[in-house]
Length: 69
Image 1: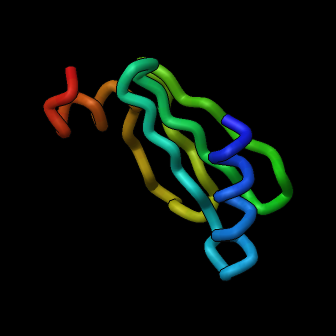
Image 2: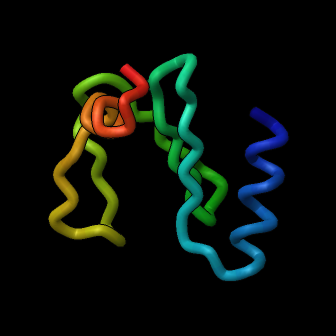
């Protein structure tokens, strides 16, 4: 995970607002934000982000749509 955190900092330095790391083995999505924190979403937890108002989807929906589960 440290490698992903370091890479996320590189993206933030380039002006990116969010970095999503999709883990098909854990069936999870970790969202990094520029302040150094992150949020992990799994199963049917609704993904919420102030930069994406109206976003209504869960990790399970993402993985089903991608035919990973």
